[in-house]
Amino acid sequence: MENVIELQHVHKSFDNFELMDLSMTIKKGFVTGFIGGNGAGKSTTIKLIMNLLQPDSGSISIFGLNYKEHEKAIKQRIGFVMDKNIFYEELTLTGIKGIIKPAYINWDDSIFDYYVKTFELPLNKKIKSFSKGMMMMASLTIALSHHAELIIMDEPTSGLDPSFRRELLDILHNLMQDGEKTICFSTHITTDLDRIADYITLIHNGQHIFTKEFNQIEEEYAIVKGGIELLDRDTEQEFISIRKSSLYMVT
Ligand SMILES: Nc1ncnc2c1ncn2[C@@H]1O[C@H](COP(=O)(O)OP(=O)(O)OP(=O)(O)O)[C@@H](O)[C@H]1O
Image (cartoon, rainbow, N blue to C red; front, top):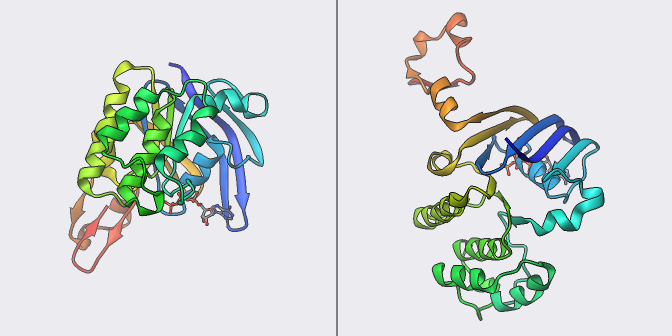
């Protein structure tokens, strides 16, 4: 199976955080959900994958190419959506399109028009008047308008109401039908994963814990809820995480 993204022994440190010896792959033609607690290193990893940050050591290859020699070629093939607005707020969507379109060889106005219509986005209102949901759909519209093979999204569903979330996940699901596209997105919302993820990558405290098939995780792990008196040193070993409260425990 072809890997679209390969990280090998990647290390990145900040003053109070270290991404340690991160090796992981993202497979072509599948949706990978990227999960981990607050501050686990998801956004840092996504920025490394996008070459917005450079690793202290280790290697990153996208479509089998490295950023040093092939940055332009790689970026042509990626659609990127961040969880915050990266567009100049005084511009309209038409204005943003005018700036971004010339950068992409494969820009396709008919796709742009299709998503503008589907998401009912105003073309001539300033971005600063957009709601969070409209902003996300506008970012997705731009990201999808140049026939990207790889879609990378940092928390695309955060802050969206359930109907926007469902619409976004349906769009992503439909995109996957030709088997040629690959999606990698981070999320805190596990029900997003139920709907579309084929693989789950979990990172914790800057370490890659696993990348597994979604079905395999469902078979291997379960949530157990019970009285705190059932826990002792032996039973605790069976759990990967335990949350205790005065009434019950959840693991
Ligand atoms: N440019 C930076 N300089 C210093 N520290 C940083 C920088 N970027 C991230 N960090 C720190 O690295 C750690 C991991 O951050 P990151 O944003 O990757 O986590 P995350 O898993 O995306 O978290 P969240 O789910 O809360 O967004 C955090 O402690 C953060 O403060």
